[in-house]
Amino acid sequence: MLTRSPFKSRDDEVITGVMGATGSGKSTFINVASGSNLEVGRGLQSCTSQVQLAPPFYLQGRPVTLIDTPGFDDTNMSDTDVLRAIAVFLAATYERGMKLAGIIYMHRISDVRVGGVSRKNFKLFRELCGTSVLSNVLLVTNMWGAVDPAVGAAREAELSSEDKFFKPVLDKGARLRRHMNTAASAYAILMEFLNGNPAPLRIQRELVVDKKDISQTAAGAVIGRELQKEIKQLRRDAREVRAELQAAEEQEDWYAKEELEQQEQALCKQIDGKENKWRALTQEFERQKGELHEVLDVNAERLRRQAERAEAKHQQELNTLKDELAQEEYIYRQKKTIIEGRINRVKRTQSSAAAELAGDQAEGVQGESAPDSTKARRPFELLRDLENVLKRLEENLRVLEEGFRAFEKDIHAQIRRLEEGHKRNQEQQNGFFANVGWAMDMWFRAVGDGFMRFFGFK
Image: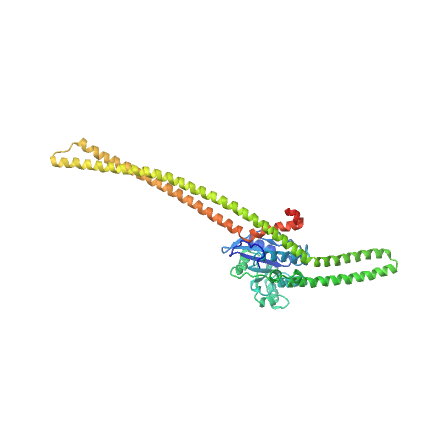
Protein backbone atom coordinates (compact mmCIF):
# COMPACT_ATOMS: atom_id res chain seq x y z
CA MET A 1 0.00 0.00 0.00
CA LEU A 2 2.82 2.42 0.86
CA THR A 3 4.08 3.86 -2.41
CA ARG A 4 5.96 6.78 -0.84
CA SER A 5 8.10 7.34 2.23
CA PRO A 6 5.77 6.95 5.22
CA PHE A 7 5.10 9.79 7.62
CA LYS A 8 7.04 9.80 10.88
CA SER A 9 3.75 9.54 12.72
CA ARG A 10 2.97 8.79 16.35
CA ASP A 11 1.16 5.58 17.16
CA ASP A 12 -1.09 7.36 19.66
CA GLU A 13 -2.18 10.14 17.30
CA VAL A 14 -5.95 10.53 16.73
CA ILE A 15 -6.62 11.83 13.20
CA THR A 16 -10.27 12.64 12.58
CA GLY A 17 -12.04 13.86 9.45
CA VAL A 18 -15.00 16.24 9.71
CA MET A 19 -17.46 16.21 6.82
CA GLY A 20 -20.93 17.54 6.06
CA ALA A 21 -22.88 20.02 3.99
CA THR A 22 -21.90 23.66 3.62
CA GLY A 23 -23.01 25.60 6.70
CA SER A 24 -23.43 22.48 8.85
CA GLY A 25 -20.90 23.76 11.39
CA LYS A 26 -17.80 21.74 10.51
CA SER A 27 -15.33 24.61 10.96
CA THR A 28 -17.12 25.83 14.08
CA PHE A 29 -16.91 22.39 15.68
CA ILE A 30 -13.21 22.17 14.87
CA ASN A 31 -12.54 25.64 16.28
CA VAL A 32 -14.43 24.89 19.50
CA ALA A 33 -12.58 21.60 19.99
CA SER A 34 -9.07 22.65 18.99
CA GLY A 35 -9.03 26.34 19.87
CA SER A 36 -7.99 27.12 16.30
CA ASN A 37 -9.40 29.87 14.10
CA LEU A 38 -10.40 28.28 10.82
CA GLU A 39 -12.57 30.68 8.86
CA VAL A 40 -16.27 30.09 9.44
CA GLY A 41 -18.89 30.71 6.78
CA ARG A 42 -22.07 32.70 7.24
CA GLY A 43 -25.38 31.24 6.15
CA LEU A 44 -24.85 28.89 3.23
CA GLN A 45 -21.76 30.68 1.92
CA SER A 46 -18.80 28.34 2.10
CA CYS A 47 -15.47 29.36 3.58
CA THR A 48 -13.89 25.90 3.36
CA SER A 49 -12.83 25.50 -0.27
CA GLN A 50 -9.97 23.14 0.51
CA VAL A 51 -8.98 20.41 2.92
CA GLN A 52 -7.61 22.10 6.04
CA LEU A 53 -5.87 20.76 9.14
CA ALA A 54 -6.37 22.35 12.55
CA PRO A 55 -3.30 22.48 14.83
CA PRO A 56 -3.22 19.41 17.11
CA PHE A 57 -4.42 19.51 20.69
CA TYR A 58 -4.28 16.94 23.48
CA LEU A 59 -7.14 14.86 24.82
CA GLN A 60 -6.33 12.52 27.72
CA GLY A 61 -2.66 12.77 26.75
CA ARG A 62 -3.31 11.85 23.10
CA PRO A 63 -2.61 14.30 20.25
CA VAL A 64 -5.75 14.96 18.18
CA THR A 65 -5.73 16.45 14.67
CA LEU A 66 -9.03 17.46 13.03
CA ILE A 67 -9.41 17.72 9.25
CA ASP A 68 -11.90 20.17 7.75
CA THR A 69 -13.34 19.34 4.32
CA PRO A 70 -15.50 21.24 1.81
CA GLY A 71 -19.10 20.13 1.32
CA PHE A 72 -20.36 18.79 -1.98
CA ASP A 73 -22.75 21.75 -2.19
CA ASP A 74 -19.81 24.17 -1.93
CA THR A 75 -20.64 27.63 -3.29
CA ASN A 76 -17.13 28.06 -4.71
CA MET A 77 -16.47 24.60 -6.14
CA SER A 78 -18.27 22.06 -8.28
CA ASP A 79 -18.95 18.59 -6.90
CA THR A 80 -16.24 17.30 -9.25
CA ASP A 81 -13.72 19.75 -7.77
CA VAL A 82 -14.72 18.84 -4.21
CA LEU A 83 -14.38 15.12 -4.93
CA ARG A 84 -10.96 15.65 -6.47
CA ALA A 85 -9.75 17.81 -3.55
CA ILE A 86 -10.87 15.27 -0.93
CA ALA A 87 -9.65 12.28 -2.97
CA VAL A 88 -6.21 13.82 -3.60
CA PHE A 89 -5.73 14.37 0.13
CA LEU A 90 -7.05 10.98 1.21
CA ALA A 91 -5.15 9.02 -1.45
CA ALA A 92 -1.82 10.82 -1.02
CA THR A 93 -1.84 10.56 2.76
CA TYR A 94 -2.98 6.91 2.70
CA GLU A 95 -0.13 6.10 0.34
CA ARG A 96 2.15 7.34 3.12
CA GLY A 97 0.46 5.33 5.85
CA MET A 98 -2.22 7.67 7.24
CA LYS A 99 -5.48 6.16 8.49
CA LEU A 100 -8.33 8.08 10.05
CA ALA A 101 -9.22 7.14 13.62
CA GLY A 102 -12.70 8.50 13.09
CA ILE A 103 -15.02 10.40 10.79
CA ILE A 104 -17.62 12.92 11.92
CA TYR A 105 -20.58 13.88 9.73
CA MET A 106 -22.17 17.16 10.84
CA HIS A 107 -25.89 17.82 10.38
CA ARG A 108 -27.95 20.87 11.38
CA ILE A 109 -30.83 19.82 13.65
CA SER A 110 -32.24 23.29 12.93
CA ASP A 111 -33.11 22.27 9.35
CA VAL A 112 -36.87 22.02 9.05
CA ARG A 113 -36.50 19.22 6.52
CA VAL A 114 -33.69 17.25 4.93
CA GLY A 115 -33.62 18.59 1.38
CA GLY A 116 -32.13 17.19 -1.77
CA VAL A 117 -28.79 18.92 -1.22
CA SER A 118 -28.39 17.42 2.27
CA ARG A 119 -29.40 13.96 1.02
CA LYS A 120 -26.87 14.22 -1.81
CA ASN A 121 -24.12 15.23 0.63
CA PHE A 122 -24.92 12.31 2.90
CA LYS A 123 -25.09 9.86 -0.01
CA LEU A 124 -21.64 10.94 -1.21
CA PHE A 125 -20.35 10.73 2.37
CA ARG A 126 -21.58 7.14 2.56
CA GLU A 127 -19.91 6.28 -0.75
CA LEU A 128 -16.63 7.86 0.37
CA CYS A 129 -16.63 5.88 3.62
CA GLY A 130 -18.09 2.55 2.57
CA THR A 131 -19.53 0.14 5.12
CA SER A 132 -16.43 -1.40 6.70
CA VAL A 133 -15.51 1.73 8.67
CA LEU A 134 -18.97 2.72 9.89
CA SER A 135 -18.04 1.74 13.44
CA ASN A 136 -15.60 4.69 13.26
CA VAL A 137 -18.34 7.12 12.12
CA LEU A 138 -20.24 9.54 14.34
CA LEU A 139 -23.26 11.37 12.95
CA VAL A 140 -23.27 14.60 14.94
CA THR A 141 -26.27 16.93 15.08
CA ASN A 142 -25.63 20.51 16.11
CA MET A 143 -27.29 23.93 16.37
CA TRP A 144 -29.55 22.68 19.16
CA GLY A 145 -29.71 26.19 20.54
CA ALA A 146 -31.71 27.26 17.47
CA VAL A 147 -34.63 24.83 18.04
CA ASP A 148 -37.08 23.92 20.75
CA PRO A 149 -35.70 20.81 22.52
CA ALA A 150 -38.87 18.81 21.83
CA VAL A 151 -38.81 19.75 18.14
CA GLY A 152 -35.13 18.86 17.90
CA ALA A 153 -35.73 15.50 19.60
CA ALA A 154 -38.53 14.71 17.14
CA ARG A 155 -36.28 15.54 14.17
CA GLU A 156 -33.50 13.44 15.68
CA ALA A 157 -35.86 10.48 16.05
CA GLU A 158 -36.96 10.85 12.42
CA LEU A 159 -33.36 10.99 11.20
CA SER A 160 -32.44 7.83 13.09
CA SER A 161 -35.54 5.83 12.09
CA GLU A 162 -35.98 6.65 8.39
CA ASP A 163 -34.24 4.53 5.75
CA LYS A 164 -33.77 7.59 3.54
CA PHE A 165 -31.81 9.35 6.28
CA PHE A 166 -29.43 7.93 8.93
CA LYS A 167 -30.99 4.55 9.77
CA PRO A 168 -28.99 2.42 7.26
CA VAL A 169 -25.60 3.57 8.56
CA LEU A 170 -26.71 3.46 12.20
CA ASP A 171 -27.77 -0.15 11.68
CA LYS A 172 -24.25 -0.92 10.44
CA GLY A 173 -22.33 0.53 13.37
CA ALA A 174 -22.37 4.33 13.09
CA ARG A 175 -23.51 6.30 16.17
CA LEU A 176 -25.66 9.41 16.56
CA ARG A 177 -24.46 12.15 18.91
CA ARG A 178 -25.39 15.72 19.85
CA HIS A 179 -22.97 18.65 19.87
CA MET A 180 -24.02 21.49 22.16
CA ASN A 181 -21.43 23.96 20.84
CA THR A 182 -19.18 23.68 23.89
CA ALA A 183 -15.65 22.39 24.24
CA ALA A 184 -16.83 19.77 26.75
CA SER A 185 -19.40 18.49 24.27
CA ALA A 186 -16.81 18.34 21.47
CA TYR A 187 -14.33 16.50 23.72
CA ALA A 188 -16.97 13.95 24.74
CA ILE A 189 -17.60 13.23 21.04
CA LEU A 190 -13.91 12.96 20.15
CA MET A 191 -13.10 10.73 23.12
CA GLU A 192 -15.11 7.98 21.42
CA PHE A 193 -12.31 7.68 18.87
CA LEU A 194 -9.48 7.29 21.40
CA ASN A 195 -9.73 3.51 21.64
CA GLY A 196 -10.88 2.80 18.10
CA ASN A 197 -9.12 1.04 15.26
CA PRO A 198 -8.03 3.42 12.48
CA ALA A 199 -8.97 2.05 9.07
CA PRO A 200 -8.92 3.20 5.44
CA LEU A 201 -12.05 4.62 3.84
CA ARG A 202 -13.58 2.96 0.79
CA ILE A 203 -12.26 5.65 -1.57
CA GLN A 204 -8.74 5.19 -0.18
CA ARG A 205 -8.86 1.46 -0.87
CA GLU A 206 -10.38 2.04 -4.31
CA LEU A 207 -7.75 4.54 -5.39
CA VAL A 208 -4.63 3.12 -3.72
CA VAL A 209 -5.18 -0.62 -3.32
CA ASP A 210 -7.55 -1.37 -6.23
CA LYS A 211 -5.91 1.27 -8.47
CA LYS A 212 -9.29 2.46 -9.73
CA ASP A 213 -9.77 5.54 -11.83
CA ILE A 214 -11.35 8.26 -9.69
CA SER A 215 -14.41 8.29 -11.94
CA GLN A 216 -14.83 4.55 -11.26
CA THR A 217 -14.96 4.95 -7.47
CA ALA A 218 -18.33 4.69 -5.74
CA ALA A 219 -18.38 8.43 -5.01
CA GLY A 220 -17.15 9.26 -8.50
CA ALA A 221 -19.92 7.16 -10.05
CA VAL A 222 -22.56 9.07 -8.07
CA ILE A 223 -21.20 12.42 -9.22
CA GLY A 224 -20.89 11.10 -12.78
CA ARG A 225 -24.57 10.10 -12.83
CA GLU A 226 -25.60 13.47 -11.40
CA LEU A 227 -23.44 15.23 -13.96
CA GLN A 228 -24.98 13.25 -16.83
CA LYS A 229 -28.44 14.25 -15.60
CA GLU A 230 -27.38 17.90 -15.61
CA ILE A 231 -25.89 17.57 -19.09
CA LYS A 232 -29.08 15.89 -20.41
CA GLN A 233 -31.18 18.69 -18.99
CA LEU A 234 -28.87 21.28 -20.55
CA ARG A 235 -29.18 19.49 -23.90
CA ARG A 236 -32.98 19.55 -23.62
CA ASP A 237 -32.84 23.25 -22.82
CA ALA A 238 -30.54 23.80 -25.79
CA ARG A 239 -32.94 21.95 -28.12
CA GLU A 240 -35.84 24.08 -26.91
CA VAL A 241 -33.84 27.27 -27.45
CA ARG A 242 -32.84 26.03 -30.90
CA ALA A 243 -36.49 25.45 -31.81
CA GLU A 244 -37.38 28.94 -30.62
CA LEU A 245 -34.44 30.28 -32.58
CA GLN A 246 -35.70 28.61 -35.75
CA ALA A 247 -39.15 30.07 -35.20
CA ALA A 248 -37.65 33.54 -34.67
CA GLU A 249 -35.76 33.21 -37.97
CA GLU A 250 -38.94 32.21 -39.78
CA GLN A 251 -40.77 35.20 -38.29
CA GLU A 252 -37.78 37.44 -38.98
CA ASP A 253 -37.72 38.51 -35.32
CA TRP A 254 -34.08 39.54 -35.37
CA TYR A 255 -34.07 40.91 -31.83
CA ALA A 256 -35.36 37.63 -30.41
CA LYS A 257 -32.98 35.72 -32.68
CA GLU A 258 -29.95 37.53 -31.28
CA GLU A 259 -31.05 36.92 -27.69
CA LEU A 260 -31.77 33.24 -28.36
CA GLU A 261 -28.40 32.77 -30.06
CA GLN A 262 -26.72 34.08 -26.93
CA GLN A 263 -28.74 31.67 -24.79
CA GLU A 264 -27.83 28.75 -27.05
CA GLN A 265 -24.13 29.66 -26.89
CA ALA A 266 -24.28 29.91 -23.12
CA LEU A 267 -25.94 26.47 -22.85
CA CYS A 268 -23.44 24.89 -25.23
CA LYS A 269 -20.61 26.42 -23.21
CA GLN A 270 -22.03 24.94 -20.00
CA ILE A 271 -22.35 21.51 -21.65
CA ASP A 272 -18.79 21.64 -22.97
CA GLY A 273 -17.49 22.83 -19.61
CA LYS A 274 -19.13 20.00 -17.67
CA GLU A 275 -18.06 17.35 -20.18
CA ASN A 276 -14.50 18.63 -20.30
CA LYS A 277 -14.28 18.81 -16.51
CA TRP A 278 -15.48 15.23 -16.19
CA ARG A 279 -13.10 13.98 -18.88
CA ALA A 280 -10.23 15.82 -17.17
CA LEU A 281 -11.11 14.55 -13.69
CA THR A 282 -8.74 11.57 -13.72
CA GLN A 283 -5.90 13.48 -15.34
CA GLU A 284 -6.28 16.37 -12.89
CA PHE A 285 -6.52 13.98 -9.95
CA GLU A 286 -3.29 12.20 -10.85
CA ARG A 287 -1.51 15.47 -11.59
CA GLN A 288 -2.57 17.12 -8.34
CA LYS A 289 -1.80 13.99 -6.29
CA GLY A 290 1.67 13.92 -7.81
CA GLU A 291 2.11 17.60 -6.99
CA LEU A 292 0.97 17.03 -3.40
CA HIS A 293 3.50 14.20 -3.05
CA GLU A 294 6.19 16.58 -4.34
CA VAL A 295 5.26 19.11 -1.66
CA LEU A 296 5.12 16.39 1.00
CA ASP A 297 8.64 15.35 -0.03
CA VAL A 298 9.78 18.97 0.16
CA ASN A 299 8.25 19.23 3.62
CA ALA A 300 9.85 15.95 4.72
CA GLU A 301 13.26 17.31 3.72
CA ARG A 302 12.46 20.62 5.45
CA LEU A 303 11.53 18.74 8.63
CA ARG A 304 14.68 16.59 8.38
CA ARG A 305 16.93 19.66 8.19
CA GLN A 306 14.94 21.34 10.93
CA ALA A 307 15.31 18.24 13.12
CA GLU A 308 19.07 18.18 12.52
CA ARG A 309 19.36 21.84 13.54
CA ALA A 310 17.17 21.26 16.58
CA GLU A 311 19.22 18.21 17.60
CA ALA A 312 22.49 20.14 17.22
CA LYS A 313 21.11 23.04 19.26
CA HIS A 314 19.77 20.63 21.88
CA GLN A 315 23.13 18.89 22.22
CA GLN A 316 24.92 22.23 22.46
CA GLU A 317 22.59 23.44 25.23
CA LEU A 318 22.85 20.08 26.97
CA ASN A 319 26.65 20.10 26.84
CA THR A 320 26.74 23.68 28.13
CA LEU A 321 24.72 22.69 31.18
CA LYS A 322 26.83 19.59 31.76
CA ASP A 323 30.02 21.65 31.44
CA GLU A 324 28.67 24.17 33.95
CA LEU A 325 27.91 21.34 36.35
CA ALA A 326 31.31 19.73 35.85
CA GLN A 327 33.12 23.05 36.39
CA GLU A 328 31.08 23.82 39.50
CA GLU A 329 31.67 20.31 40.83
CA TYR A 330 35.43 20.69 40.29
CA ILE A 331 35.44 23.98 42.25
CA TYR A 332 33.24 22.43 44.93
CA ARG A 333 35.55 19.43 45.37
CA GLN A 334 38.63 21.68 45.50
CA LYS A 335 37.06 23.84 48.23
CA LYS A 336 35.76 20.78 50.06
CA THR A 337 39.25 19.23 50.08
CA ILE A 338 40.72 22.43 51.50
CA ILE A 339 38.08 22.75 54.24
CA GLU A 340 38.28 19.06 55.14
CA GLY A 341 42.09 19.41 55.36
CA ARG A 342 41.70 22.33 57.76
CA ILE A 343 39.18 20.38 59.81
CA ASN A 344 41.57 17.44 60.07
CA ARG A 345 44.42 19.74 61.17
CA VAL A 346 42.21 21.37 63.81
CA LYS A 347 41.17 17.96 65.09
CA ARG A 348 44.81 16.87 65.35
CA THR A 349 45.66 20.07 67.20
CA GLN A 350 42.67 19.43 69.48
CA SER A 351 44.00 15.97 70.25
CA SER A 352 47.45 17.36 71.09
CA ALA A 353 46.00 20.12 73.27
CA ALA A 354 43.73 17.66 75.08
CA ALA A 355 46.69 15.32 75.71
CA GLU A 356 48.77 18.19 77.06
CA LEU A 357 45.96 19.31 79.35
CA ALA A 358 45.50 15.74 80.62
CA GLY A 359 49.25 15.47 81.28
CA ASP A 360 49.28 18.71 83.26
CA GLN A 361 46.36 17.55 85.35
CA ALA A 362 48.09 14.21 86.02
CA GLU A 363 51.25 15.98 87.19
CA GLY A 364 49.21 18.04 89.63
CA VAL A 365 47.69 14.96 91.21
CA GLN A 366 50.99 13.07 91.49
CA GLY A 367 52.80 16.04 93.03
CA GLU A 368 49.90 16.71 95.38
CA SER A 369 50.27 20.38 94.71
CA ALA A 370 48.18 22.80 92.66
CA PRO A 371 49.33 23.10 89.07
CA ASP A 372 50.52 26.34 87.63
CA SER A 373 47.23 28.14 86.79
CA THR A 374 48.76 30.00 83.82
CA LYS A 375 50.12 26.81 82.33
CA ALA A 376 46.79 24.99 82.80
CA ARG A 377 44.78 27.81 81.26
CA ARG A 378 46.67 27.82 77.92
CA PRO A 379 45.63 24.28 76.73
CA PHE A 380 42.10 24.85 78.03
CA GLU A 381 41.67 28.12 76.12
CA LEU A 382 43.29 26.57 73.06
CA LEU A 383 40.80 23.72 73.13
CA ARG A 384 37.94 26.19 73.42
CA ASP A 385 39.27 28.25 70.51
CA LEU A 386 39.83 25.15 68.43
CA GLU A 387 36.27 24.00 69.09
CA ASN A 388 34.97 27.34 67.75
CA VAL A 389 37.22 27.13 64.70
CA LEU A 390 36.04 23.58 64.08
CA LYS A 391 32.39 24.64 64.27
CA ARG A 392 32.99 27.46 61.76
CA LEU A 393 34.81 25.10 59.38
CA GLU A 394 32.07 22.47 59.61
CA GLU A 395 29.46 25.19 59.01
CA ASN A 396 31.40 26.38 55.97
CA LEU A 397 31.53 22.81 54.70
CA ARG A 398 27.79 22.41 55.24
CA VAL A 399 27.04 25.68 53.37
CA LEU A 400 29.38 24.64 50.57
CA GLU A 401 27.70 21.25 50.20
CA GLU A 402 24.19 22.71 50.33
CA GLY A 403 25.11 25.33 47.76
CA PHE A 404 26.56 22.74 45.40
CA ARG A 405 23.62 20.36 45.87
CA ALA A 406 21.19 23.21 45.13
CA PHE A 407 23.18 24.15 42.03
CA GLU A 408 23.34 20.49 40.98
CA LYS A 409 19.59 20.13 41.49
CA ASP A 410 18.92 23.25 39.44
CA ILE A 411 21.15 22.04 36.59
CA HIS A 412 19.45 18.64 36.58
CA ALA A 413 16.06 20.40 36.52
CA GLN A 414 17.20 22.50 33.55
CA ILE A 415 18.45 19.35 31.79
CA ARG A 416 15.14 17.62 32.49
CA ARG A 417 13.14 20.57 31.10
CA LEU A 418 15.46 20.70 28.10
CA GLU A 419 14.98 16.99 27.43
CA GLU A 420 11.20 17.25 27.86
CA GLY A 421 11.03 20.23 25.50
CA HIS A 422 13.19 18.42 22.97
CA LYS A 423 10.94 15.36 23.21
CA ARG A 424 7.83 17.51 22.68
CA ASN A 425 9.43 19.12 19.65
CA GLN A 426 10.29 15.70 18.26
CA GLU A 427 6.73 14.50 18.84
CA GLN A 428 5.36 17.58 17.09
CA GLN A 429 7.71 17.08 14.16
CA ASN A 430 6.66 13.46 13.93
CA GLY A 431 2.98 14.37 14.15
CA PHE A 432 0.55 14.29 11.25
CA PHE A 433 0.00 18.06 11.33
CA ALA A 434 3.73 18.81 10.98
CA ASN A 435 4.05 16.34 8.12
CA VAL A 436 0.93 17.43 6.26
CA GLY A 437 -0.41 20.79 7.53
CA TRP A 438 2.30 23.00 6.05
CA ALA A 439 2.40 20.92 2.87
CA MET A 440 -1.37 21.17 2.35
CA ASP A 441 -1.31 24.92 2.82
CA MET A 442 1.61 25.34 0.43
CA TRP A 443 0.06 22.97 -2.09
CA PHE A 444 -3.27 24.78 -2.23
CA ARG A 445 -1.47 28.09 -2.60
CA ALA A 446 0.62 26.55 -5.35
CA VAL A 447 -2.44 25.17 -7.17
CA GLY A 448 -3.85 28.68 -7.35
CA ASP A 449 -0.55 30.27 -8.33
CA GLY A 450 0.80 27.68 -10.71
CA PHE A 451 2.52 24.71 -9.09
CA MET A 452 5.76 24.67 -11.05
CA ARG A 453 6.23 28.45 -10.83
CA PHE A 454 5.36 28.55 -7.12
CA PHE A 455 7.97 25.95 -6.14
CA GLY A 456 10.50 26.75 -8.83
CA PHE A 457 10.36 23.28 -10.33
CA LYS A 458 11.26 22.85 -13.98
